Length: 267
Image (cartoon, rainbow, N blue to C red; front, side):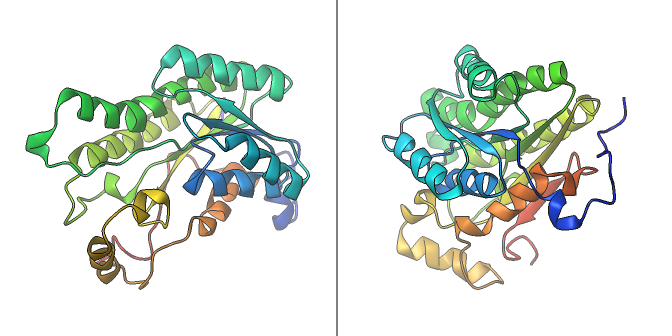
């Protein structure tokens, strides 16, 4: 079966970005990039399920976005590192929240630690990879089964510029390699699932999230000196890209990796 094509290719362009009536899910959706992705999808008309792990304010965040946008937004606690756990959660969301449907899944949950490679132990290494790599796989597999059954779906993976280069001066071999693995996984699934799903990746550069603000000022200043744009990106500046990939405006795009980094990877 060929890649999905909208019935009317002459739909006005702004209408192609509408997600009205769609059911979306975002892992790691309670903060940082994920929270803005949830907001963007909701603003475009989708009903959105937030999957969170440890956040204490996820239900409050969901309620605020729902009130602001006028669509349904609901939080669900789960763990992307546990295959059966995340599968049950995603099935529950499709069955109950989605009323039997799931259209868009954003595999966004991620963690980062700066650890010299000679100091890794099994626990530290496994933690990074279980969230950033395994977590994407288990999220994707659960979503893919639903997409295949219903004949169509859309998976978007949050990768990183770290999938394509080695960040300096920090040492983060596990983060870099796990994100590179997630990126290649996305490309592989795009080919394997072309009959029933589009799969694309977003690779952000340095984004002003808690992951970044926990770093020492001298490290942030060093990164700023390496970004041609001269500033760090705010997470609000990413939501439009995710809406584009989730919408029919990107109907022929699959297997792509969009880098959004203020030119950081160019020099």
